[in-house]
Image 1 (tube, helix red, strand yellow):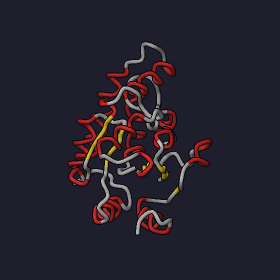
Image 2 (tube, helix red, strand yellow):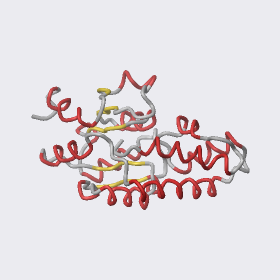
Image 3 (cartoon, one colour):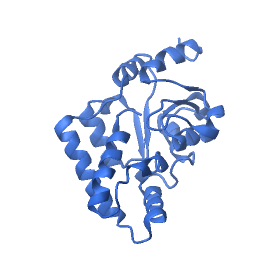
Image 4 (cartoon, rainbow, N blue to C red):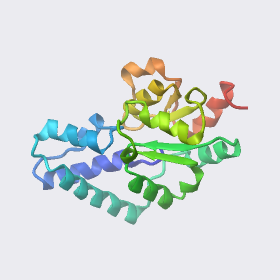
Length: 209
């Protein structure tokens, strides 16, 4: 949602897969968007066999991932800082709810310069059930001290949208690699082109003035 990491991860899977004898694996990302590490591990072993070396695969693609970021910087999505600045000026409480590990998420936020915008962070290693289960959004709202029905979630994956809707939040989709949310689309509030559209949407729908 915040960083153009899905396309980058897809690229690293296409690089690492052939090295490990599995061929290009970038297409698998469409089946794992929004998953935490435990669910991704299960997916890869269901797909490539129980002997699939998930830990080695993860270590190898992360090396490629961080090498790219070190050389090119964090690929920031259009409108990220505009949206964050606007939300903070409005006095909104902000939480990050991600399936990534706390270490990985914090490092990326700090490198991008947006760590301080968030009042609370809940990550994949801090929950027992990953998206689409509502746990992560329920705990995010608890961490902010905000009722779920008074919160909105910005999401780019089907599992993330399902998690937010199941928790009772207003879910707004900002598409990335996944452009459609299929069966969940009739339950989300909106599908916007980019983060730049978030302030206008919230104002036009009388959610904020």
